[in-house]
Structure formats: structure tokens, C-alpha cells
Length: 480
Length: 128
Image 1: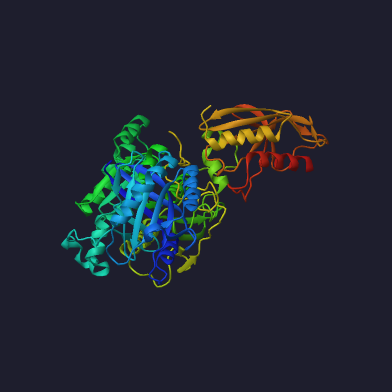
Image 2: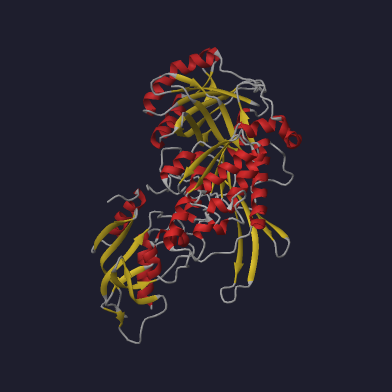
């Protein structure tokens, strides 16, 4: 079986594993990573759910012939757990070295002795054997049919994205000269990293269109744009690059007969088409994949399981629920962003004006834990329009809220900054992962540390939680 | 009925919670309308025994469960109209009903269930 194989670890998992493997004693140490499996478009992602540490000298130590190995009872216990939870079993250990590492002949002989039996126990799951140096990783992944493939990389989604490969990347790709000024910030290597990434922009309205433009100009290699809406005349002041022609304004404007307006809407351009045009004009080398649909549907969400980063600019709570689930289930970092103008219902006077950027995902906060996916709002969204009208106290979602490009631009710009620092390895002097609110009326910036609830069904450590489960559990998405 | 595993589990829990009642469920947009028949409202309501209906959204258990609906003929025993959060002349899925609107501001998807919420709503009604 050929494809691209990647193991994803959170920053906390990597910190713990590194400390265990490299305590400074020069000895060999081992552990087992239990990982959810995700397969999509020829890519297999192993998403670490848990790392099980043996006790040195009891569960891990030299066996016959002096070869270090995990104890039989430890292997039996952990492999049973992997089988019960539908997870891959990846035994890891350390070698010396820094930026290069490989499995030894002894490692491979050990795999050949033990992995066929493990594959039987795991009944269809994957088994792997990995070796880490301080700055490199290599592994063989065994398929249920006992063929094996090399792991392409380990990706650590910590505060900074870290990629570990068997040897330093010497592909020699040279960054496009047009990006020279920005590459001065994060280096040619950073520019090449950006060119190799796939990111999803969910929602291509005012904020999403700005995101697409910024990401394309930054040099991101592949942008997946998702939206199910068309451009309307009232969107034109906010969707960057959109034109009156996109909105068929002369056909859809008020006062035209209903049938002409309907024809106009049918001819209006989709927001994803405008987003693709923006991206291509900004950076012709940028690959753009257009998905017309709602991220809350399984058909759309299922296409995002192997992306490198999620930008959530959609305005439904259902979208938040599904994208937050994607982040934890598949180990994908992301950022949710928006801008809001709060007004008094009686006289329309302004209460608050703010833009907000909230990183979420494996190493950052969880939108559910932090009260950003309210249970009542989810319930409201699920009610059909007919029921909403019958249950009169529910807010009328058809009432247009104020929306201004300048506020959107604050959020979009800072969200892309968050992403840029994360993937290119730029240092942050004061930590990452906090929510930031930019309050325009007060000219203030508020920082909030997101909470993590241990019992959270999404990000928590409890049995059955979604974190690191890959394809073994369903996303909370609709089947439509 | 094609519903999520979480809704299937919720219906089973409701059946176990109301063992002396008939629990029926009707699929609706990936969620389900659930009716428990009968439930006891206590002496402050007439009739004391009625039906309790509620909708489980397809995002359950992340979504709260409200409003709840009683039989359309339910009135206060003492007369004088209904109380706040209880509204007559409402309907669920085109069935006439009395609506009980009790949101759970601290709903926790890891802990709260439709069965627990139904018991809480009934306790609240009995206490009014």
C-alpha cells in the first residue's frame, strides 16, 4: 500500500515523550503511542491519542542478547487497549544522534519477530515501530497484510509546528523570489514550509475572503475554500475582490420583479469562486480547491481530515461544533475568528464593537470547553423555521447584524499572523493559544487564557472522548 | 428510524427512566421527537397526568433539550392563567400543546441527558 504516512503529536505529548526518551542518561528508553487512524486521499494520518510509558527496568530493559525491549505483559496490556479502542499501536524508542535517525537491522529483526502476532491481536489496526533522535524520527508502519511502509514524518502541533523526518529535508526547493521581503522574517525555509501546506478556509464571506487573500499572498501552497452561498450586493463592501457583476446587482436589486431577481441570484457567482479568483490573482502558484457546501455536513467535513490548519470564519454554532471536533479528532490546529457589533434592540445604539481571534485544537483551547458552542444556540439552529416561528422567543436570525470590513480585517490579519508564527517556527515572547479580543470603542486588547476541562467529551482525557480518535468515531456532522 | 447513536442511547435512557410510561420516538431532520406517555404533573395541574414531548436535535448531546410540550388541555388547577415559561396554544410538529420553556444555561454535554432534563422539567412543574 503506497501513500503518505504521518504521525501527529500534540505539543504536550511531544514534551512528555522527549523527556522520557532523552532524560540525559544516554540510555535507551521506549514507549508506546496509541493513535487514531485517518485515511483520506491517499494520506494516512496517525493521530496520537495517548502515550503509554513503561517503567524502565521493569517493563522496558535489555532482553536476551542485550537487545532493549518492552516486557511481554506490558505489550499485552497496551495492545489489548489498542484493540479495544480501535487504535494503532506504535512502539517507539530512542537512538543517539540529532537530525538523522533510522531503524537498525536489530530493530527490524525485532519487528519481524513480534509484529505479526501484534497484528493478529489488533485485528485490522496498524502496528508501527519508530525510532527518535532529538530532532529526527523514522518508523515502519505495518499493514494488516504484513506489508510495511515507511513513515514520512512526525508532525508536532505544539505552539510551533515541528516536523521530524528521518533526515534533514534537502529537497533544495527555492522560495519564489517575489516573497523575498517576507522571507526575511521567517527565512526561505519558512517560505518553503508555507508552500507545502494545505489549509482550509471555512466560510468565504467578509472575513473568509480576506483570509484567502492574505494566505495566498503569504505563499500558502494549497487553500481549500468552503462556502455554500452566493455573492449578494450587500456583500460587496466586505468581500475583497468581489464585483457588482459577481452579485448580478442590476438584476437582484430591490424593485426588480421577483422573477428577474431570481434569475439574477441564479447567475450570481458563488463565494468560493470569488475566493478562488482572489487566491489565483494573488498567487498563481496557489492551488485552490473549491467545496460548495456546509462544513456541518459529513460530505464536506470528511474532506478536511488531513489538512494542516483550519480557519473557521463561518457563523453557525453547528460549524463550530464540527470544526472543533475535526481539530481534536484528527489533530489539526486552527483558529476561529469573527467581528461583532452589539447594538441595543430598542434604539440601535452601539454597545460594543470587537474583533476576536481564538486559536483552538490539539495544543490550544477547545471551543466547547470555553462556552463558545452554547447548547441552547445549537438547539435553536436545529429547529426548523416553522418551529422557530412557533416558538417565538427564539431570535430572528434573518435580522441583519452590522458588519464592516475594517473590523473583519483586524480579525483576519491577526488570525493569519497566529498561523504564520505557528507553522514557520517564529518565537512568541509571551506564549500562544490565548484568545484575543480587540475592542475598537475602547482601543483595548484583551487576552483570555482558554480553559481545558478534563472531562470534556471533545478534548478531555476521559474514556470515549473524541481526542485523537481519527476515523474510528463519527464527526457530529449531518448526513445531508 | 435513522438517528445518531447518541439519540438512540438517549431514547433507551428515557425508556429506562420512565419504565411505567410508553415512550415513542419519531425521526425528524436527523433528530427525533420523543413523547413520554403518561407523566405525572402533580395536583397543581389538571389533568395531573398528561404527555411530555420534546425534540432531540441531531447535535444532541451537545445541544440542549427544550422546549418541552404538555398535552394541549393542561391548565392550572387553581385557575388564573399560566405561569411564566408555560405557554398555552403552542404546538410541536403541528400537534397542539402547552409549551414549557426551560433552557439549561449550564448544559454540559458530558453530564446532562434528555432523561435528566425531562425529570428536572417535571420536578419544576410540580413545584410551581
